[in-house]
Length: 299
Image 1 (cartoon, helix red, strand yellow):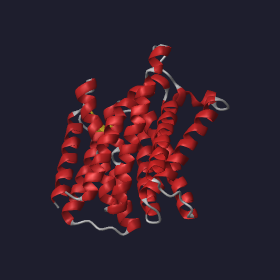
Image 2: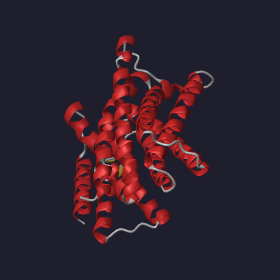
Image 3: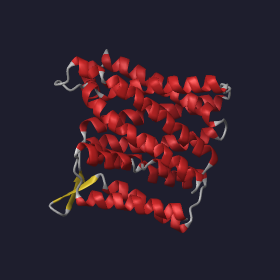
Image 4: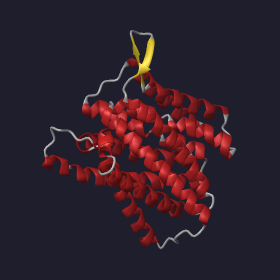
């Protein structure tokens, strides 16, 4: 199996698992608090790994600036995604965000000069169509519509996630993946905390949707969100490590596309564990994702 597919799927499993934890946490304490908490946990873990491994800190201005910009895109992507998960069905929002894999393929071909075989291109197309179908419902058998307002945030997230993937790949050309991950995760955490502070003070009245908590959740139950956020932050770093390693050693399009199957993991778990129901067209979408994955794996 290609290295890019293995590392991408490793990231997908980690990110798909954390999505369920995050979805439940954001509905209790708001997406902005969860985003900031998860990024702080992730940054602390990356810094610890850098210290333990003796990784050299970056000095190249391109790496510092480029990594910071990738981190900013990541902060926006996570916040948009988690807000979508809070206000929309987990299965639908996750499915739409998964379309970032298809966009990553297009950007990798246009901006990075990568090429795909006919079978790989077919697999990428099937997978992308599949994840889009999981986010669309059909009303009265003919009129298509977005299944939830949360999909708007999901669309923003998918564009930012694809941009983050290509940006990280460009920066990794100039520095080892762990060095780049240190810069991106640190800037991501700093921005998330700054946004939280500003939203909680000066812009509190306008930040209601991002800070909203479930009024029926007691204070003690809200504190139980902390372990879930810590676990999610750990899973996120594991996924990012697999993702960054893949970008350094394999094709960008393959790593990006395979990593986008994380929401497919969430969709299956949401149906199996939370009782969420999918329409027939969304099951067709999941089947297309599977067919696309098989086509890529055998090519």
